[in-house]
Image (cartoon, rainbow, N blue to C red):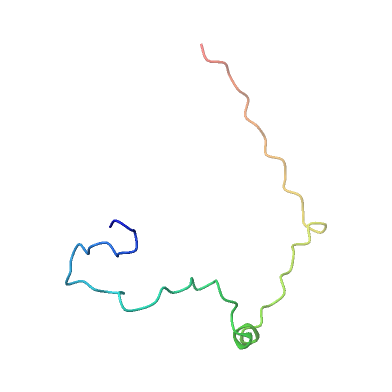
Length: 68
């Protein structure tokens, strides 16, 4: 195309999918409806209490012998 406003030629002229629809926005570009947000209440997240957890026993390390 000389002026850049023409559409490029189709590779398969029989395949005309999506030529009559306008360009769609990505699904996350619009905020969700308010009813969808209230429909699924989320349970509060509970953190683990590390103060009452038992410490792991120290793992013994095997002695290392140098290679000869």
